[in-house]
Length: 551
Ligand code: B12
Image (cartoon, rainbow, N blue to C red; front, top):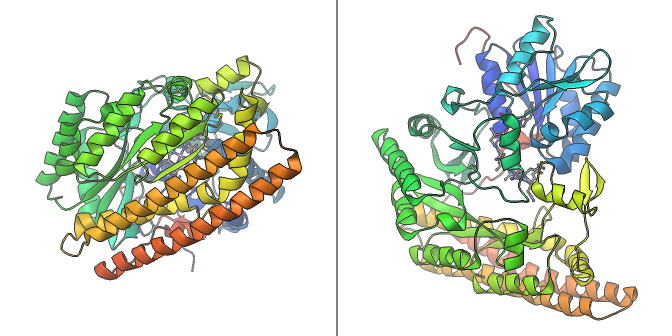
């Protein structure tokens, strides 16, 4: 029987691909304030109906429905869900929030009458204040961070109030079974909010400026270590996946002090056998820092933000990193034997044939590193969107912008690459992403079960990535050659069909090898991997905490 949520309650709707730290942080704050909550997963079309039912068929209607508009590419789905909820008769307050919703609050409130308000920027305090006001039937016009319509339909935003001290926030709600890899339970978390850099394609710098606070805030080490220790001792978590935009601070000394302090704080709390997954910019990679990161903080996998190795790409993306820094970082990490994966933004508005070649050379040279590649998208709040708008090159509306590359031939390469490589790079079963997971299994075994680890598995994982990288580079070079010849559309279609078939054949072979490798590792450890969180099955999870119980 579905447990009845405590009264009054708030429905939090959004993707739970992994634990959704935003919804879970909001849930924790609402719980602390005495509300019941349901986290209702809505990550794809198949969850639309069940998510509606979770609200409409609940034993009592929620006080408030709050929908995630963090991800711009899913905004239309989420808005359609909101419209469907209204059509089916829900008359209560509907709000939304997250990155996209915040940047586009004025347009969204103008165009979607179904939305009553929008929580702009970090919503922990705003959402609780909104719930309090609705419960007490008070006006909503003085709530910091809330955008509403006034009586004349004018949209007004009460300036957000930045959360200066992240330690004042409760730890995120961990309801549901955690994911696991080879029997090692996984939790996602953040140790900071913001980033010290400001790349042109990323909205995070503008996002924190919108909030009016510092561009980077760190959780105190003690607060972070205390949460990790509780997760470790009480929930058996031993893999911590950090979603910080960057785990490092742009200064070797400051970064080193923080990870040494974290390592010591964890050891003092009896957390000794654990692994971490973090992200870094190449300029942060030094031998001493990463040796310490591995020894003190159990580094299992590093997501290294390469994005581009072409001089033009690095400039367009405003990376603040040079190609020699990219190479130096890759070499340091290779010498230390650290598992790295990466992403290349092969196409951006200024990409030239020369920059494509520079990135292909990089992908081949470090082919043993699992990588994926794609095009830079124009997200709300990014300087790149601002630039393309001012150049008259951004097409579409605030709901989604598109662009063409300045060089016609590069645009042709992109269109062919998109059709031939979608399956490999972006489908649900994309091999480029799967190989990152295969290697992760191998690394988890190497880290936690050295006695059962066979070095041949690591060699095979690297060989799989190398084979994929070489095949992708060869396919892309064939596309580049084709795009430069003035072939009629019919011939281009034929070329794309033939190349796609060749790519699929390689994928089938490599997928089989990856499967065999995963099975060997799992058999050696005697445990399988459960990457999918149970909340993905669409059933809402109610809190069972009673109203008067302390959080
Ligand atoms: C973790 C993460 C993911 C996880 C998602 C986990 C999940 N939800 O299941 C994974 C790795 C799967 C992922 C995937 C993608 N991601 Co991502 N991701 C992040 C990341 C690094 C951290 C988010 C986080 O958890 N932060 C911690 C929480 C506590 O903070 P928060 O998210 O900011 O939430 C606060 C506010 O935003 C607001 N809020 C957020 N959600 C909601 C919802 C409601 C109802 C309300 C009221 C308020 C609210 O209140 C929260 C509390 O203060 C952000 C970067 C960032 N720093 O935010 C990118 C980011 C959100 N991702 C981004 C993108 C582009 C993607 C992908 C499209 C990448 C890709 N090419 O595949 C996919 C799309 C996924 C999808 N929905 O289909 C962009 C979004 C840009 C945009 N506006 O669309 C971001 C901002 C990265 C960036 N720098 O540009 N991502």
